Image 1 (cartoon, rainbow, N blue to C red):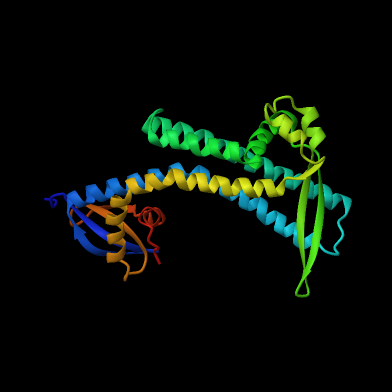
Image 2 (image 1 turned 90 degrees about the vertical axis):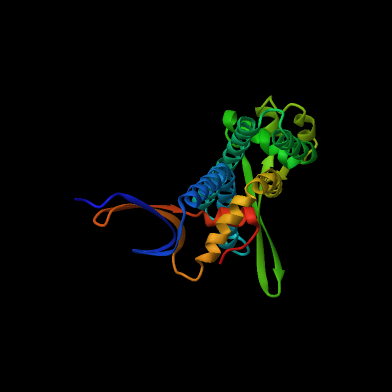
Length: 286
């Protein structure tokens, strides 16, 4: 006769092919911790689109640094190299602008569905983005540039490298110019931005505008997430206590259900989202 089926629950640490059970927990604790983990994973999933924005911007920034090192200063650049450089920068800018648009659209939809059209969360989002749009040319222009790119592709651009000497080292900076008149002549949907764009120099730098918008989006994202993190703080604190309880053991923290008998046991592991716990509690985890 087979042994009866029983269930047991643990706080555990898993390291490669080994598992160490820190202590037994009750079924009630297991259910509560599972709900906390699910909520923080949902929060992390909601944040993933902003992560894509940052990844695309970092790709662009790192490529610019690479080009400054390769072609700045006294270095020369061939026509094929220049064409490849321009194509790659255009690709990275388009990727970034598309990621920004997707992030903003999906964030607005998510806040509406989760909290409601008239909620504080939704009204704050509108206020943050409207303030950035009204207050910064970079935010307005790059929002419209994404629409321009959809219809016309990115406008013609030119590149220059400026160099300065500091402590015997040559420091190079890549500057990418767009042509004002081409932007105005090829696109009729600038709206109120048309007059402002017309006051710009014929050639104006776009890299500095991308840098500023990246900072603005980071600030907006932090403001949106701040109250959301507060809502999850209790869940984060409870999971943080489990992380600290198990920190002297190697591996990754998780809660485990073990269901079976003496001959056949089925283990299910639910990983504690350490990064999300750190975010909502404001505590660093080694």
